[in-house]
Length: 211
Length: 211
Image (cartoon, rainbow over all chains, first blue to last red):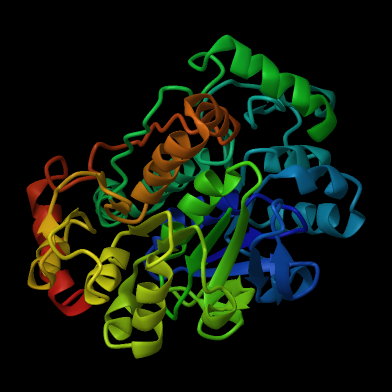
């Protein structure tokens, strides 16, 4: 079982690390961080780099693909090499997944046509032009396509998919090992719950970030 | 404002990335990943490396120090260079923090004597020989010392500390931007909630991992 997690310039670190730390604990699985070129790939803040150990070409048929999102996603929407690779690996993958605006890359590759999918709450509408049906849920399964909402939702996606593949008991053991008993200090993690003026402030800013 | 996140061989990625993705969104702050040597530092699974951009010596007086945990922590308990650095930076830090078994490194440096602190649930007792008082809470404040429980709790710690420093509204905006509205598929994230046989299985394995 091979899990490929895609990196590209200005991805969001937690989008990739959430699934890595949960789904990556699949017994017997090999997790590979892949990118167009090997070496360090900088995140959106520029303060961190994760290492890509393989090129896309070196990983032609992973069982599971994970595509993170982040501000850098917009710069990849017409990246032929990446979109071609996504289409190629999707032809044989058991699961094709994304976190946050990573779903827009799956959509741009033509993989979400006619499918229910989610994305960062600020980017949900951007799925429509690609023929996907936006679903405002945290983790959305449609056949072998699994999309997660913004950034931290990749942890929930990873655990959920881990349970489907390896069984509930193994996923619960990983939840316990990572002590994933979330206790956020506020209840502001979704646009339905956060104070309205904070939602509107982020929405105003996002015109320049996501579109 | 400078935030130093410490890396060492076989740390757990999410321990470091949780605070980075939350606390690191402190306005005007510079986040630096530091280690004994610059370059890629491998995580516990060996499948991922994060880049250390600065040596410990190059960052002598950060305002906030974050020490992640992970299986590699045991190998650092007598690392004089790291423990000396922790003592030095603690002399001028505004906040000295840890995630998971990172608190054992703060304790080994003598920084938690007489203080309430937490750690991964499997490692709580290991705080006692260093004079710390184990507190089975997810995020523990004692003066400027902030310790978080296992792995994923660094997200809650990061948001909580961010709120203390930058105000509730900014922390809520970061929670919303990262869509941190956790919906774990199971309720097995703490030893009080997980099925007993899974707790015992991890406890049995931990004798070889954490002690």
